[in-house]
Each structure stands twice: as C-alpha cells, then as structure tokens.
Amino acid sequence: MVGLPARREDREARPALTRRAESSARGCPGGAPPLVPHLSASSRSEVAQLRQGVRRHARGGLTPAGAALLPEARRILEHYRRLPALVHEAARNRVDAFDLGSVPSAVIGLVPSLLSLFAEAEPAVSIRVHELSVEEQLELLRTADLDIGIFRSREPLDGWATFDLPPDRFAVALPEGHPLARTPTVRWQDLADERFVMAGRAKAPLEFDSVVGACVANGFTPKVLGEAVSGYNLVALVASGLGVAILPERATALKLEGAPYRRLEPAVEAAPLRIVVRPECLRESIYRLVEIAQETPVPSDPASVDRTEI
Image 1: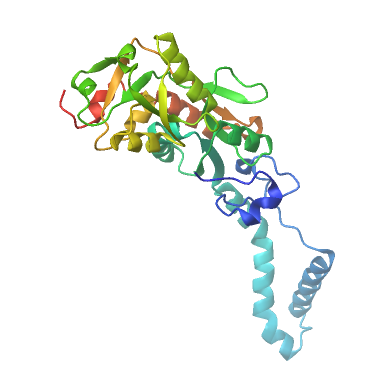
Image 2: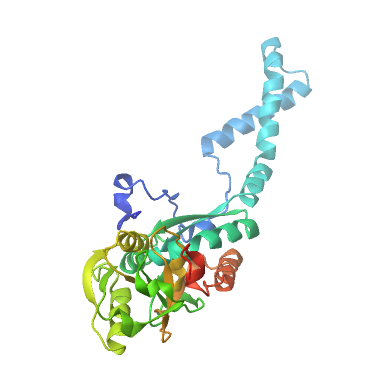
C-alpha cells in the first residue's frame, strides 16, 4: 500500500507522496494562486537606472564602452517588459494536480478505467493515486494532504462533497475445480461449510462486517481461516486453495488463474462506494471525474471474467 504522511512535517521522510508547493494561500493544489511577478525595491531601481541609461544614449550621452553594452541592456528591458505576459501564459497553461485515495476494491475495479477515460476528457489535469484504507483517507482529507477519496460508507459524510457511485453486489471467488464453480450462481447457504479468507477487520471494518452480516443473514457464521489486506491478496489466497472469498463485484475485474468468480444468490449489495471531495477542490474537472465514475459500469456477470468452463 502506498502511504501518505499524516503530518506535513513528515513529508521529507515519506517521499511516496508528491510534495506540493507551499504558499500563504494554499487551498487546493488545483487552485494555485495566480503567478504575479514581484521585484524588490533594489531590482526596480536597477531597471529604472537601465532605462535612464538607454534614454541618455538616444541623446548621444553613452561612452564607447556603454554603447557596446547597449544591445544587452535593450534585451534585458524587453524581457522585463514581456515578463507579465509570459507569467500569465504560464499560469493559463499550468497542469492542475490532485491526490486521490482509494480503497483496494476500487483500485481493482474502478480506478484504472476511470483514470484512462478522465485523461482523455481532461488532459490538463493530473491525478496521483494512493491505495489507502478508509481511516487513512479521512485523516488525510482532514489535514488537506488528500483532495479526493474513494471508499465505502453507509452514510454521507458531513463537511465533504459526497457523490454516490452505482451499487454493486457481492460475488464469491472459488478455488479452481471447486464443485460450486460448476454452476453460474452460488447460494449463500452453500458456503456454510467453507473456509473463508477475508479482509482483516482492523484495516477494513465495514467490508468485514458487511460480509459477516450477509453470511449471518443467510443462516451461518463464516469460518475465517485467513486474512489479507487487499482484494487482490484475497484472490491470490483463493487461487492457492486456502479458502473462498466474498468480494464486491467491482473487484472481480481482477483476472487471476485459479480463482473463478460466481454470482451469489440471493443478491446482497456491498456497502455503497462513494467519492468524497474537499469542498475547496470542487471545480469543473472534478465534476467531470465524478460523472465518468458514475457512468463506469459495474461487472454484471462475475463468471464472465474467468477462464473456467461453466
């Protein structure tokens, strides 16, 4: 997992996160303050003296040595005259950059296609992605070290701009050759005697509680044999034959030999996936990011992404 510094003073020790330019009007990095040239009093005095010297030459007042330096003096004055226009052009063409955090299941099934489509729609905006837990994202949003978060939550969060994404239901990953993989769907009750590998509750409490709650609602308590940090580690454990895993359908975008997916019946929705944005970072490009995410389809048939014959 890519970590971010919990405090600004830790940045030097945590280079994984691209450092942001500090300023008195920090706000959101995509809303950087305008670039305005500032000259010190001494610099303004030197420019004024240079201008006066050029004017004296126009009246025949320069020495031969001064005349030899005249072309360079004129070049400096022309550069100074054009400086405001050059600075404003640089500001107009600058690339906005945002830091986006995402839970592992969204890194697998949403973020790759989202960023690809967003890059086509907004080529002047750069998004830096960091795989983070919900708690890590919330802390970094509070400290303004993260601009956008993607995670699952049951309720909208006060103080943030929150956008719901299309719901996805649970699917099951099974070891290759498992008898239940012979059918296109699996009933929850058929998993009662299986060994489970799950995301650890310490890192993913909502995901853990959602899966356990769905199992209990369908008449059994899962036998948890192993825990993993992220969805792709869960699927790898399933492929090794350690057990079965319950995952949101978005996570089934990960194709791994030896771990076919099947839809679960009855349908149970995973906790809602949301995009959370610091209000000061909202602008047209971020609304476009949200729109693309909301239009990105959820896999409708988990079994179609594996290589197992049904």
